[in-house]
Image 1 (cartoon, rainbow, N blue to C red):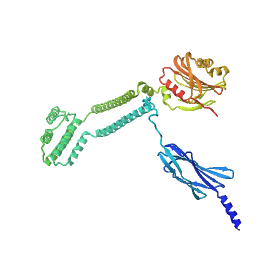
Image 2: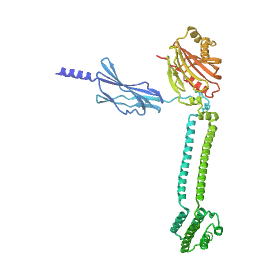
Image 3: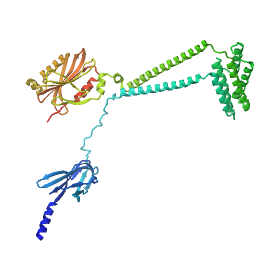
Image 4: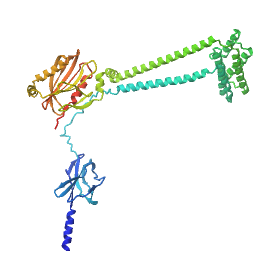
Length: 528
């Protein structure tokens, strides 16, 4: 029985043999440098391992962690868990023990001492540098066109809103004008009955409105210039109209009006405050004058009515024309003002070219495409996707973009079959002064086939950002009767002749910027 228990505990201990180790890549780290912390668990059987969801490594910060990796090692299993830590304080710190759950049993790791070192700066040995100069950055015109359109749109909305409000106001005015002057005068006189006359200022307002009603009625209905006349001048005009027979007013009616006008002048200029019943009587007298005036006026003839309506229509047309002219002036003034301010800030040509959508300016400001073409892959950024051209020779692949305007503009990427030995020898020659004559002749022949003449080439070495060497030919030529600039960058990579070329109007203000951007982006992808 004793031996049986010993054997049982021996096998039991073997089945639960587990070993936990922790390690770091270095016990000394410079402040701000990443520290790799690793937990290794070795077991003779498959176990379930869990870690804390939010492990505490204070004063270190966790910037990354890996999943638990399981490795079969002969008869054992090795479990690996990694953490990336960082500290921004200098000194000696302990990485605290970490809690692990092995088959739901809690285990802890050992703590580790780490020293975080400051960066030593020796001002005597450390070289000092001058302050870097200010870098001049080109102004961004990409949003100029859209901003200008937005501003003009807002101005148009404001103008349209103003026109609509004026039209609504005119409609309201027209509705008021449809009311007959007599009916309007009677209605306003009836409204005066509700005014509370308790002080001199209210009497002044009352008599001002009272006399305005009768004056406006004479102005609109009897064609008497009453609004700008004094009381005495108005009475004289009425007497004259009565003598001339143009208005059959009775003398009592004119006397009643005179009485009201005298009281009104006393209230307005002498600050008089008559009794309430006097003010009420004056309102009744004015109402009587309006009624008698209407009865004394002859009915207008058909010709007079038509003449009046024609005059009113002509005035309305004239008013609308003036409003239309004002709107046009405001719009053009706004356009000129915005354009002038933009030119002051950005310059004449950038603003003009942006507003007129100059072709190459539009290309430069648009969304460029970074893509790969051909075999071996050539990565290049261009204003537009290069389209593959149909060719009778399947071994030659050509991708190009041609401008759709009347000035020369071409971007072309060509892949030719394995080159002949002579070209290869010239291309790879170590003699710096030697120009690959066969390559140059090949490029010139291609230009001449496109109609170019007077070709003046130069050349220089060219190296991509990844270090692949090539030759750059550049210069000027005449194409479509326009003096143009060109460049042609040639590579021989894995026995393939690769050529990137561009032709553009030499006077084009944006051609060189497009060229530089394309050249800076070119890269040959070295396939594994």
